[in-house]
Each structure stands twice: as structure tokens, then as C-alpha cells.
Length: 256
Image (cartoon, rainbow, N blue to C red; front, side, top):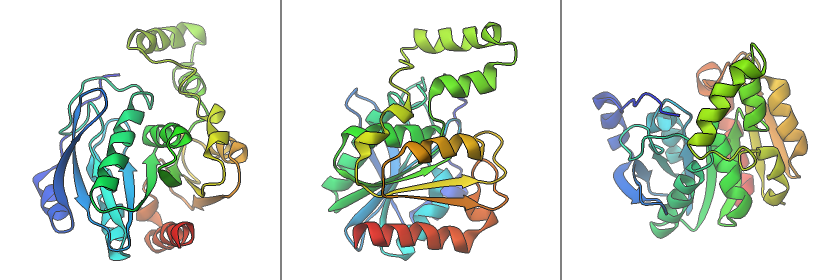
């Protein structure tokens, strides 16, 4: 609920400055988020949403990759992370507001169309926002659980309810609504928008079978790419050329 705040390094910021402009924008509940914006050459901006306990530089490689192909990118520190406001993570629930604000910023600064890409908890926020935000034209999802209950049961359920109860109670006291963070219940609302799911074959945090349940429940059109040997993330590290081909080909077809 209160992740360690890891700020971008000077080297990362210098690298980001080569392609992006430093920006801030505000969420509907009054938090100021810090990000980097790459203006699009083709009118399409991809909003990039990181996972718990990291920062926007998780997607620096992806932003550079997108820029090479004419796509814009907005990669930002989510609430309670990096250089942004806030001190509580709600595992995707309130983070929807961050995605909403990022989509709005992109559309107000040169984007005619927007896609969203999330990793882990970031993918939950992306899917929950896209489910009720028609401005999102395509969705890319990396490593996602069907629901928060299942993830907590897996990661904190070693002694059954005795070990899960403190986690669940802490989240509820922080305002997390477990029914809201059930991604699998919101998938139908994505309708006919293109969807790309990405997972690592060696991911023990979010196993392939777990991710597959979300893929199976999502409406067409949808695609799945399994990164061979990748664990929780790091898809571009184990197969950089294939990762780039899969993502760019998906976007090109989604927005052609």
C-alpha cells in the first residue's frame, strides 16, 4: 500500500531528455503526476503505465522504440511513485484516475488517437480505465491477474485466511474495493477494440495460466505473445527484436 519511492536516476533522465519533454499533469482527485512526453509524428500516443514499486523509467526502452516508428509516448510516475504526488497505492483502483489524466493530456497535446500499455498492476489500471473510457483505441497488457482477490490469495495465502486477513484488511482500510479491482468482470466492456496480451513463459509472479484466463475472457479481437524465457517483465531484454516487431505490428494494424 505504501511502496518504496524510487526516483529516476540522473542518467535515466538525461536519456529521456533525448526524445521526450518533461511534463506534469493533474488527476481528477488533485494529484500532480510527473512524466515524459514524446510528441507523435503519426498522431498516435501510447500511454505507458508502470508496476508497483518502480517508476516511469521502466518504459524508457519502449518510449524510444515507439519514437523510432513515429509513435508518441507518455510515460509517467503513477501516484505514490517516483516524482509524483500521493502516498498510497490501490493496486489499480485509483490508478485509473492517473490513466484517465494521462489520456487527456495526450489528446490535448497533439494526439488524435491513444493506446494504453500497462505492466502488472499498471495493466490492471489500464484495463479498468479502458473499460469505461472510449478515448482509448487499443490496449496492450503485460502480465495481469484476473482479480485482486486471486493475487492476494496466491501471494499471501500460505496459511490460508490467517495470512491473507491482515493484507485484505489493510487494503480495505485504505479504501480498496475488491469488487472494483476484478479485471475479469470488466473485459466485456472493451468490446471490439484491439487487445494485445504479453506474458513471459518463465513468469512465476503472474504465471502463464493466470494470464491466460484473462485472455480467454477478453472479447475479440485479441492477440497473445509469449516471450520465451522471460520472467515478470523484461520482454525486451530476452527478445528485443521480436518484442519490437510484435508491439509495432499490433499498433500499425490497430491504427492504420
